Amino acid sequence: MLKQTEGSYATAEAIALCRPEVVCAYPITPQTHIVEGLGEMVRSGDLKNCEFINVESEFAALSVAIGASAAGARAYTATASQGLLFMAEAVYNAAGLGLPIVMTLGNRAIGAPINIWNDHSDAMSMRDAGWLQLFAESNQDSIDLHIQAFRLAEELSMPVMVCVDGFILTHAVERVDMPDQADVDAFLPPYEPVQVLDPANPISIGAMVGPDAFTEVRFLQHYKETLALRLIPEFAAEFKTRFGRDTGGLLRTYRADDAEMLVVAMGSINGTIKDTIDEMRADGFSIGLVTIVSFRPFPTAALRALLAGRKHVVVIEKSFAVGMGGQLANNVDLALRNTPAAPQVHSVVAGLGGRSITRASLHRVFRRALAQSWEGAHFLDLNEDIIGKELHHVRKVRRSGPTAENLLRRLEQAAQSPAVE
Amino acid sequence: MFQIRIHGRGGQGVVTAAAVLSIAAFLEDKHAQAFPSFGSERMGAPVVSFCRIDTKEIRLREPIVVPDALIVQDVTLFKAVDVFQGLKDTGYLLVNTNQSFGDLHLDAVVAKLPAGHAVTVPATELALKHIGRPVPNAALLGAFAALTGMVRLDSVAKAIREEFPGKIGDANIAAATEAHDAVAARIRTAA
Image 1 (cartoon, rainbow over the protein chains, first blue to last red):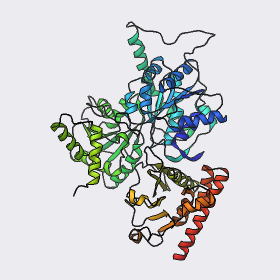
Image 2: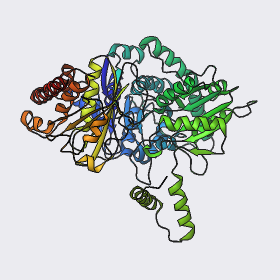
Image 3: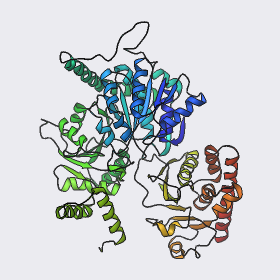
Image 4: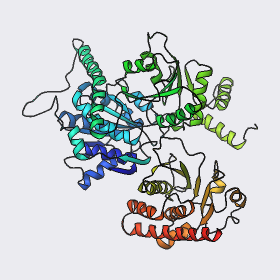
């Protein structure tokens, strides 16, 4: 059914259609309206056979989900930013134990400096924890990926994180096509655990494993995640048959067939990039897009097949590893390792801490990639003026003070005395 | 694509106004996207929200920098922020006030816009009359429907009903209707 609704509530409704049996959440910033919506549905009786557990922290939220999942319940939680960091130990445990929990991450930056806005730093902090990570481009995508996430999680007995851009998607009111309960039930059968704490057949879950088998347990975890490379496209195809919408599987393309330059990106920025590509195509540029849906597992082979033979690849991402560069760009580089005549990879870091990514800036950076390459990461719309002043200040003064406060003061000064152009 | 930017202060329902407007457009089978300017919104602080309306899917996620229409919920904002930034020469301007554009020293701004594209409406007074609280957004959306024709009054009323069921919804619809009719009458007189 078509409806106009806020991203968080649309996602909450999709989660409810998946019939979770335990939803646990710590309802304080950073959090979205998703668990609030689910809490209301449990209370009103619209979501039956589901226990909503209000916990005392994010660490407890995921720990309760782990317990519930081990006891055979379909378990769900949601978090963002610092909340994800606070549950970090449990994030690794859920994956190591192979428990099929689904968690929404309403992507936000991580402090310090304190910042509540959107970027992908939180998702990247847990990219190696052993969860599948799927990135939504729109709120429709969020609905569709969450439904597939439960199926994937339970088929593989692995946890899945669905990344939905905080504010940009979670707080946007837009049109979604909400699936029917009967279709979701047909796509997602009741949870049949591969391991369960059952008093009738007692087992233990969570053994201590020494050097004799730790590598093998890890190897099987990695092997299962590589199975997802096959399952994700399979389930996406089945989803398309039933619901009529193509989520793309591991990745999807836009005007890519003949493109000499391919942009690679994840999440909500893909929409703005598509509009920019249409404008550049109209100007005669040979440019297309690859949207990464599954960041973990990373679609190395599929991506290599797409990128090989192109002249330029521009990776746009909302996070970076300090001292190293963009994580997505590094992964794209890896996908192209040992490829003959590999395309030139241009790395762009954009939208950090909620900075808007505009078509104007994208036009500039795509044209620049064609004209003159650069080393490492290019920071889109970097305010070089205040950086130059701050670096000069730091060189001259030993007790130069806190960077964040210094930059804010410089911005304020610049606003009060606009530069003469 | 038609792009609307709404300026107000925290607590005036700026975000809700954009959401309700997007629902009204949706009810007319259009695509619409409403989103707030994200921040730690405090009561009384300047707040901005956005709404895009189109006949096809809206993919763009950048803030609205070149609006087709501006809705200003609070006249004290003219001194605090650059409300008119990017407003198109063909744009619309709707201001909540019981004063005239001349009283607000905005004649020069209005003169740049096509005739009949700028109106004032005493939305807060209408809200106090019908709802009993100074929440101007329903009245402004009614006035917006009359000013731009981008949505119909009955769609605005249905959208208000979705967001605010019961008596509060009725009161908001009454405010929207009176504002709509006042603006429609003014535009007819001017034409």
